[in-house]
Image (tube, rainbow, N blue to C red; front, side, top):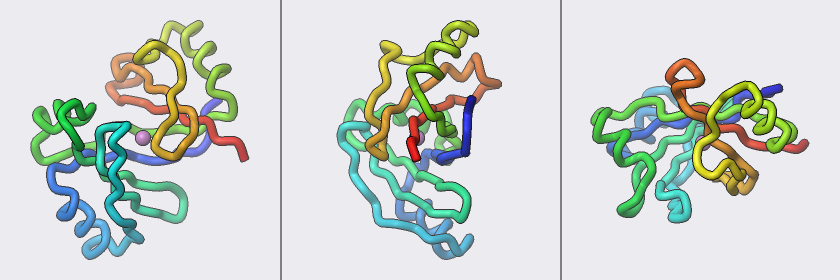
Length: 136
Ligand code: CO
């Protein structure tokens, strides 16, 4: 059901320092910082040949990654995102399998303008999963 790895999201306490590691140390193609107030984050996209890395930093008071950074002060992998063809089909199959979909279970518009859902880490080996509908 799942397809390509769309991105790995890494929460960072210092966005400039995090971006500099990817740009200067790892030699990656690193974009500008983009504020996404509707998601409570500022994001830097790192383009790799086969996927993306998203460096996330809290934006605003109710950022979904603020608590994560409190528990992981030097940053860490926050979630990974898999592509699916049909997000409602994927959701219904996961719910039927007993997996927990976060929030009200309805897809939201994600960071790339496509429908996304998040799945409970306890159902997936301790990893927060994001599913993104990608129609190509
Ligand atoms: Co994501």
